[in-house]
Structure formats: structure tokens, C-alpha cells
Amino acid sequence: MDLKDLPANIVELPLFGELSRDDIAGVLKRCSKLFLSAGQHLMKAGELADCCYLILKGKVEIRLKQHREVKTLATLEAGHLVGEMGLFRDKPYRIADAVIVRDSQLVQLPYHYLKRLEGVAPDVAARLTRNLSEIATTRVRSLAASIAPAAASPPADDPAAPAQTQGAGAAPEAVTLVPIQIKMALARCPMFEGFDQDDLQRLGDRVQATRYPAGQPVFLAGDRADSMYVVALGRLLVVAEVDGDIQEVASLTAGNCFGELALINAEPVRSASILADTLATILRIGYDDLRDATAWRPRTRERFEANLARLAVERS
Image (cartoon, rainbow, N blue to C red):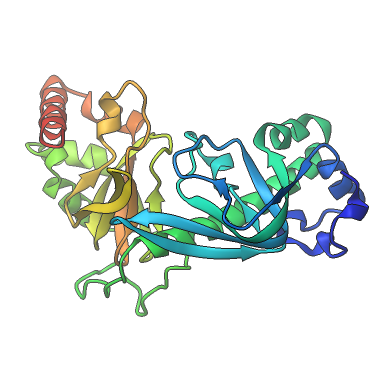
């Protein structure tokens, strides 16, 4: 593709931030241009994601079927990127439809080509990856806010909450909890039922506490699983696909855990998305740390395995 065929302001687009015209020309020279008419699908939810698209002209709507109704999540025009989220997921499937609502011209950017740039032009590939990551992060937050219902106020008794409520656009942040707060949260969790103070101390030494603002995803369905979580404060939503619809299937509050069942799955992949419904503080425990902390004596290991098996049956 010749750069002269593209808009004059292409260097100003977020995708190409800090890249020169020559760099952009190098990226696009092997990409193809598409022409689609209003009413055509650019992407469909559930399809394998293998590329993203840069809109040159026209208009595209991102639509999600939710509770048997089709909801428009975003309307994108010239300069916007579509389909970039799959580039950062272990299971790259489309989670929403993209429909052309005005005749459009687009540039197709295959994922395999973008990844191959790392060996050809590593500096350009690194800058492009950072730009794509920033765009994808913004899109994830927007999607989370669209899926989740209106956020409630944080609990009044949240000792880790700041003086002012954080908005959905804020990023998660590490927080420091005193040991007794961590132990209390772990002790309420059914995964650690029957654990004594020594067991809880070994677990507590390995957890990471993070505060998530309302609307922020902890992880998305299809992400690779490497840890479990315990809710210390606040409320989270479990969002999953049910009969083709994206639905809220459960809520989680203090003492609940999530993410532990991937420990017994042959393929450790998240089966649902978890979103903060209110300002929430959660404890993360990596699977390796979890195994180490529960294997130090036979009684603890047996109790842990029994609890895991019980939870697996209850949630099946």
C-alpha cells in the first residue's frame, strides 16, 4: 500500500504515535485496503480474531448482544482502530460484532504481520505495540463500563478506601493491608476453611492486595489463568456468555474467592470475566505460591484439596 493513498493526517493517529512517515510506510506496505458497504459485518462475536482494522473513511458500530437485546457499545469513525483487543489475549476470539453503518474504507492489519515486525524493525514494533496496548486498555475499560450496571458507592466500612470514590477510568493500584485484615479475608474464604493461624500466615505472606475502581475488569474470559483471588472488600460481578448473550451470572463480596478452578482444568483459561461493581480490594495469590503455601504439611494439603474439590462440585 502506498502512503499517498492514505489520509494526510495519518501520522497524528494514536496507532502511529511517535512513528515517522517512513516508519508508517514500512508498517503498511504489506497491508491491504478493504471497501465495505453499509450493513455488512466487519467482525462477528465468537469468530477467531486474527487481525485488526484501521478505519480510513466511513463509520463502524461495535454491538454486543446482552440479555437478548443488541446494545451499541461504540461508534467509530476515521482514525479509529477496530479489533485490536484480540492481539493481547490468549484466546483471541471476537467478543462483539462490528457492523458497517456508513460505506467504509479500512486497512487490514494481520496479527501475525504485526508480530513479525519484531524481527524486522524492533524499535518500530515496540512503539506500535505500546500504542496498541494503550488503545486496547481504553477499549477494555469502555467495554467493562458498558457491560456492568451502574456502580454503587463503596462500602462505608472499607478501611482501605480513599476519601473520594475513584471513577471507572482509574487504574487498579496496589494497596497495603495490615496482616490482620489479610488473615480475616482469607479465613472467611471457603477455599481455606479449616486452616489454622499458621496456615493463614503462610498464605498471607504471599498475597498481593490491589484496589480496583468500579467498572474495572480484573480479568476477561479467555485470558490465561495463573492465580486465584479473594475479595477483601467491595463487590464484583461475574459476567459470562449464556446462550449467546453476555450476562451477569453472579456477584462476589467479601470472603468470596474466584479463579481457583483453573487449578484443576487441563487448560488454565478464564471461563468468565470479573468486573468491579464497586470500589473493591482483592487479594491475589499466584498458583505456584498457593501450592507452596498449602504443601508444607500433609494436613494442610489434604484440607486444601478437599476444599478445592468441594468448590468444583458446587460450581459445576
